[in-house]
Amino acid sequence: MSPSFAGVGVSAGRVIGPVRRMPNPITAPADGAPLPEGTTAERESARLADAARTVAAGLRERAATATGDAADVLKATALMASDKTLLKAAVRLVDSGTCAESAVWEAADAVATQLTALGGYMAERATDVLDVRARIVAELRGVPAPGIPAAEEPFVLCALDLAPADTATLDPARVLALVTSEGGPQSHTAIVARSLGLPAIVAAPGTVDLADGDVVFVDGIDGTVVRDPGAEETALAAAYAARVPLPAFTGQGQLRDGHRVPLLANVGSGADAVEAAAAGAEGVGLLRTEFCFLGRDTEPSAEEQVRAYRAVFEAFGDSKVVVRTLDAGADKPLPFLTDSTEPNPALGVRGYRTDAAVPGVLERQLAAIAEAAQGTEAEVWTMAPMISTPTEAAAFAARCAAAGLRTPGVMVEVPSAAVMARHVVSEVAFASIGTNDLTQYTMAADRQLGPLAEFNDPWQPAVLHLIQTTCEGGTAAAGGPKPVGVCGEAAADPALAVVLVGLGVSTLSMNRRALPAVAAILRTVDRSDSQRIARLALGAGSADEARTLVRAELPDLDVYGL
Image 1 (cartoon, rainbow, N blue to C red):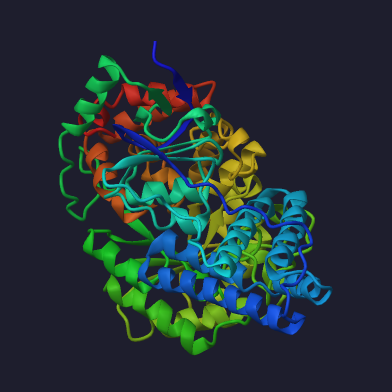
Image 2 (cartoon, rainbow, N blue to C red):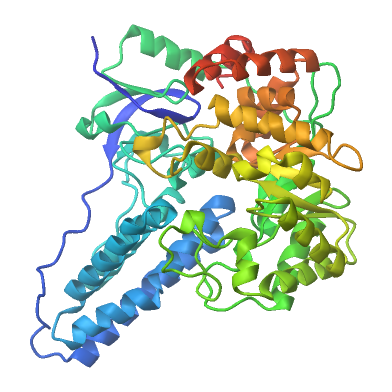
């Protein structure tokens, strides 16, 4: 029997191909290696600063040509390359007589150790620091930086995990599938793979034994990798290759009986919005405004924000655009807004809570959103992230009203907001469920950690029950029913989309590439079907059981290779 390895399938697809492993990482310099003979600490510090600037500039240049999640990841990594804490620590070591390579290596080690000790989101940033360190050392040595291997034939890329900057530049024309031994279902690797439509498996520890040239079968649906595939795997890959093409998305999401389920897009810039509109998205269900703030030491001006938001509004004409106010903190630290010394940032001052710590930023952002909406036809809705109580919801609604924004809403990402949904949603006009955070907070499982991947799954029945509770709260809200949408990664899973509609979700927002698949599967069920299928998932004892029960009810998933 061929050796097989189990992991977590995060992007559908079944393919066979040769393995190419990520190249060996940059080797560590000698501890405390002295300054090169004939140079000075001042010159060595300048060389270090030049290398860091070159790395940051290269990452920003790549970000400028990327879109969506990839652009955000590259911008965040570029910001890390310019991190003053890291560079100052390295320069201090140079001043004490250490060469630039050893100095930045040691300084980054210290920063990464501190971040790892903090746990949660900040531990994930340690990977970024080590990635930046390798790039700076490569620049100092004049050797290529770490990156995706080159090959004449398409290949299955295998790695321990991928640095965000590498993940963001995956080329589906060269990479057949992605397999990592570490990482989790909501890691950067998983999210970007889904946005590219690339079959992917994460948290498959046994795959460290795979070597260059090994031929493997990758099943991104079931989460398995098989070395030296046989007839069964060959047949599955052939069936996937011969799958029925998805119908083009018509721009109108609905069930078989005509029940409307608007399909919206998650975007992070004006360029994203143009692409999403061209793909048929019926509007924007999540505008991530962080794209204006990342990579900066200071708050962007009102003019910069207005220009950026208006580009999104204009791309969608008179359609709905849901704007999420700044979701800073945790894995998105900003030097002018967040406290990097928090012991547990995922449970700290992030999202809406930053307004209490640094008043004024939210007020100025809301004013910029309102100004950007003027002169456009867009139907602008505005929501706050990390709302936990009805009091917070009411306060945010009041701030929106003061800015002239008429449709305030909240993100439901915290279990308390789901449990208290009737009271929370009564204070605003709508709610949108962020399934990524709701899952990690419900299951107490950091969404970036591979060892916790089985917990950090939106198919967990506990999470589905909280989604149902939130929808019921929206229906029972004071003043009449209020719509509840989903804008987390769960909306991009066609099978889970059916369950979400059955639970009462009114709109689904996703990356633009997922629109045709979700639309096609929704059209195979009517409303009573979706409710019956949702009950099956709610009654399951585990995420795997829920997924299996639901997929058995949706045979067209196999027809389309989803």
